[in-house]
Length: 82
Length: 410
Image: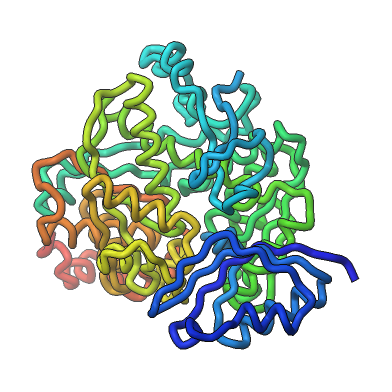
């Protein structure tokens, strides 16, 4: 399986701010996570990070974040324009 | 020759070579073109610009390309009309409308794609690409054809046939993607990362976005080499508003116009208003939204330049408004009825927000005001089709015509 790198932004709902989401993710998947920017308050969380690993692990980790209710978007944000 | 020194990170200032790159390796901030303004100031003049063809390339020193082999369909230098009838209805004494429906594929996207495709050809790309539901697809398909490039255009698979004709005619590879809006976004980001294509609003974004500055340049030139006092701009990604501002500031910086405090006002649809919502909440924190509006051309729920648009609005002492679907339709009709311009839904948003901003007193009624109409209504006729007067069918005789009493109303 090929190693891949993704740069993504995460938008957390307020109920997940107190949960160690990324810590749990790193324990579960064989990935490297490099946080570059984050803003976390009582009401929401916003994180920009790089994630590296085998394609299966990276995709699994990102799918799990989505399943938890975190909005996972590419760093370039919305590219589908009129 | 180019006056662009480098690509520079908007956040940390890190500089990069002028290649197809859009995000800073260090802080993930967006990259944009950085110019040698001292040199431009020495070389540029009103007379020099005025002697050039009436297209965006008359401002070549301030555009991010190297040579003069432009991939052009003569985009730009669209009409700036004094909108006295609309102004009278809204209580604005010095209102102008910048009509970008007059571009080759009938929207402002021709400006950005002309710049992106020119730069792509300079960098040796043979393929131009984008993800779009309308105007951008048309422009990429057309400008790619003009430049002899292969073209890959991604659209949601459920897009109405009528909307793809204006792209299909240029014979691009048109790919309909199953799934929702987010699925199309994610796939296109993945494709842009894998294939060595010029994806106009991804890896070519630093060049692409600069094309929008020409709206600011033209407005100043058409007003007799002076900036307007206040402008109202539709916001999707937020890039257009920031670039009209940047273009105007550049004109001041290189001495083409006098310094002026121009106020920037942004317009969004209520069904997709992350920037206006953040403005009204007095926060710089954005939350992505799921678009639900008839203004499809502004339906960007997670705007790439939202933060910068908001910053520009605040720094210029401007504002932001939003309009409901009903108000958008009324805005389209108002502009058409008063000034003879049939705008797409984004234009309806602009006019509806212009009206609200005038009514609330946010806009100075005496100031020189410019509203930007970025695309033609002929592409989005379904938005207004059910809201218009119907055809009155009569028998072919004078009595039948007079019986309609149409001559009684003017």
